[in-house]
View 1: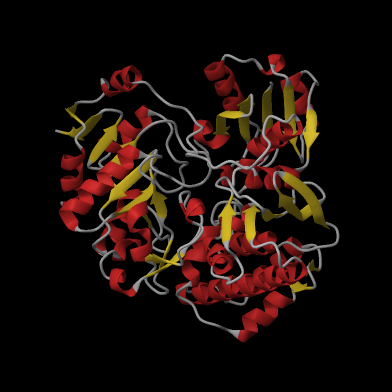
View 2: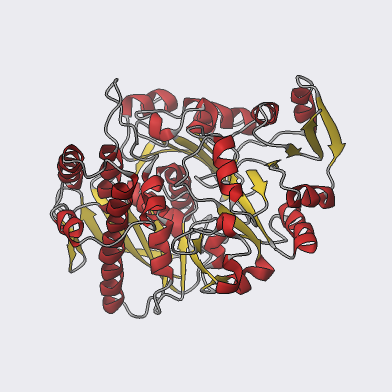
Length: 530
């Protein structure tokens, strides 16, 4: 058996991971410790995260059996961290292996990664069966285009630059704003025609290459001509960007299915699949029996994927598993929590789920800090803010407290037992445990939970909460359901605008001290201001 460290460095999303004997021990993103979001911290290195894992695991990097860096690799840093003793792992191979071997899927599965390019490829496709992966196609960066670049450079150019030459909206950080606006726009053939000059799809090929340069030229030209001057104009462009993305990729999936009709299960990784509206379109295809999006779908998921690939090569992982959760970060003892709380003059009570459920029904915003923090971009009930979902005004109030944009939607968490009566279609619910797919809301529920429903297309990005996987969160949902008849709560990430999701008790207490939340459930206790 073996110990494996893996790292991603020198780009955005610097991350460190440790797997021992085929078991995931830690995965920590640098932004959680540096407190600078990865989209604001390019060319970053996992200095803090690697040191923290060494501290927590008591396993020095030099003493581990394998040390892996995922392409592209800053060799000087890699040599310094490992004393020159490391191996290289392919970017998209790491994506695809991480996704397939955490999917829990049996039988024939297609694993697809697609992003802005990490080594020589923008996409790889693997045909998988019974734990075996066979490369079907690799799309070279010099030949093929990237839908991720279309989104990234559209995001960066839409709002222009500040007085210091920094983009107001940034790649790998603000693409969700465009996705959030899209539902409020409408179809415009002229914009579609413009997007087609940047990238097109035919016969399993996205072409031409240099999507980033082409997009930059188009968006800069449109901004100068006033195409993005108003909120409505930005919504119209975003609608067509989402529409064209869906159109191209669904055409691609259909063509892939025609070649391999026996494959009806799909797993996805890479930054493109942070787009939950595209994921919804894929999930609703008739021939897709089930889909799964790797929870850390962006480059933050590469080190874990690299560890998994090495463990597969060593025979320590032989078949896909299902994750109980992605709580792979730092946890804190009750003593550590108590020590941090002494710096504040808060009231303190023992946690009682019925009391918190009543607080939620009364409109209080509850900070929820439990276990180790999540790996990936979503707050999944470890570092979350919980609010009742039944009033539309909650949306505005949350945005004001968290200083977020109105266009950013909020997501529901829902008890597994009630998912099917509220959302549809009834498939890919394992992936929905990680909040990676949008679903349609049943008509009878739209007005019951308006704070977590997209106001225009009535979709939602639910997180399914399974009792035996997160019993404490399930329990407060259950108590709230007894009071309100609603087995749903609003769940948003525990952070203010432009900050990473919090890590430590100190950060949680400071959020309570500032009045951003009304109560804090942390460990076994509840804190609130006097």
